Length: 511
Image 1 (cartoon, one colour):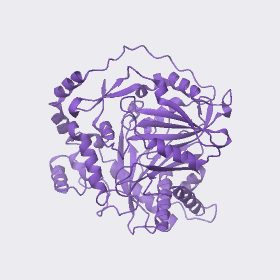
Image 2 (cartoon, one colour):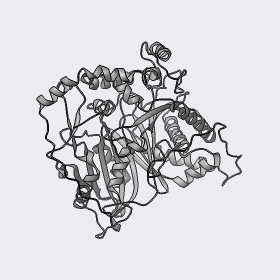
Image 3 (cartoon, helix red, strand yellow):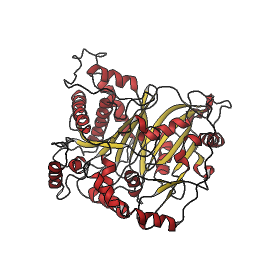
Image 4 (cartoon, helix red, strand yellow):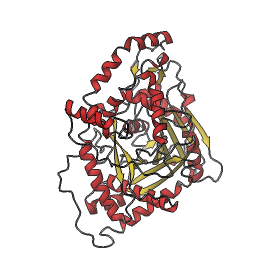
């Protein structure tokens, strides 16, 4: 058995009838590169079956401890049924991107079956020009953004011919423990829970004010200051968090069980031309055009606040040694995004300065801060505490407005069961209080954007995709290709060396 970490368990705890804890991805495939020129669910099932040795989490199922006395564990599902997880469906004749997005929104709004391994895969037929779509759903308790990309990579190949996968090593069958055995395990671990919390104190208390949603909790400011005097840590707020709470927008409040999804592609070369012209980063441009698109939407709905919105930007803290370990190795930055700035160029400059400062301060945070903080919550009340916290934060001024996430992807063509991968659009998570998520993944020479929103809060989510394109066009017109721009504006501060993963891909924040 493999026990979940406290952070992994929190992604289970947040689930409710209105909130799901899984992440998804929509791959667009061209079957003309397969030997038969087609791709059906039997081909996909055969591929997944062959790759299972590379994907151990896809056979893991949850085993809970009675009364919630301890965190759940993963075991090998003794009754694993691949046919349950791999499914197919078809869109109506003449369906376009809007119908595909509606189907995706319905599927991702449904929770996963916790009595089985927490993933599903759908092959969707009926796209224009003979294309097919592959929608993956996998629970955030199993993967974060980087480890989710590793799972996707295991299903993809660098050529249509595929690759040889070594046969699985023989391993003894894992027996599912009884409830009595899990109860005994939970009781035996009860004395360890206070020790886990105590071990987390040095790496947590001095940094509490850096966490979204905790800044306004009664007594926290005093507790954090006292902790900074007692426990060694930074002598400043490690994140440049605004003194005022996030402004109110139409997509901040309690969410419904329903979702809207829109997707689109932007040129990575155009983004790089902009970032090179100003000496910034790809992530600076992505966050800036996302802020611009949201600004346009808010103006169209007469709802643009005078203050900048606050965005959560996930950051991978997975080290090279932790590659392939699955689970969650993630932290977050909460930063103001310049939705109050009408000038696209100035918005980009402010975005660069804000993200650079946030990254500098974020490096002062312990890599396991989110995991350590969740250790203070007793497992028996973790689910209720998580849902209550989200509900309380949604009922008052929110700690943040939206999520903007940028995940690096492969720069070489990939194939799934012989079908060429044309694009991969992320489909991420929203929660009470934060009803808008913009996630982007790079592939080849383009950036694939996926926007998820609450159906009632953002009924016209496709307009944000158009806003992204318009923002990119405006910034492109400010590069030397259109008129002579000033010399690139570079920060005087020395930037740290750029980290890379074992495969050579940049880290999740594209520093």
